Amino acid sequence: MSPHPQHRPEWRILPGLSDYAETLAAMETTVAAISRGDAPEAIWLLEHPPLYTAGTSANPADLTAPDRFPVHAAGRGGQYTYHGPGQRVVYAMLDLNRRGRDVRCFVHQMEEWVIATLAEFGIRGERRQGRVGVWVTRPDKPPLPDGSPREDKIAAIGIKLRRWVSFHGLSINVEPDLSHFEGIVPCGIRDHGVTSLVDLGLPVTMEDVDLALLRGFEIVFGEQARPDTPTACAGNASCEKLP
Image 1 (cartoon, rainbow, N blue to C red):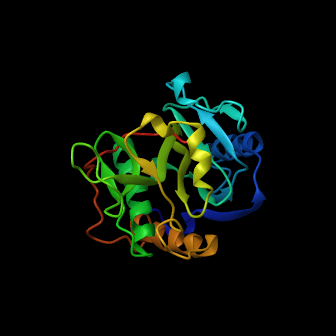
Image 2 (cartoon, rainbow, N blue to C red):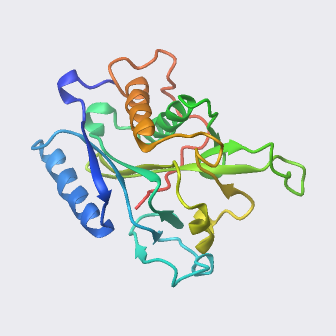
């Protein structure tokens, strides 16, 4: 289901580093206004200062450096995650009342959005059953003990819904300090690492990623959505619920 052109989301790029608590409060206000019909759908592109967030199922043992950065109780499902400079955070406030009330398929579309964005840079992003987010295979790294290829997480995806309006969204590692992830066990996954577009050897800027996100959104959600864009959920459509 595609929205009428007049319902296309309002895109905003927030300058600088956005305070975590203030941004979440503003998102709560915006989602409430969208739910009432008083505001258009919204997509915010931003960066946070370095911080860790803990979901409701976070294991305290996975916070390996509790004093390194501020730790926020996110009030979402999931475990620990990191946000910081060089990571493009995308908060997508979309009205599923007009886009189809199917949570699993919406999460699948969010994953497809990331995959389409990465494809702009020649990166093959993939889903993995039982592992949230979008992953890239690393043939340049030693394989796992069982012989399977090592994979790195390049993007986190998650949503929360209130009255069928979405909160949160996704984050893509553009050029963050990857050592910052060492203070946690990201999402409780120990056997695989994290990477970024620049770590993969691509001299990509945040502006490049923003343009690719816009084009990817139109492919998956827009009026020009590809006929072959999946409408049924396949693979891992679990919800990470980013803070």
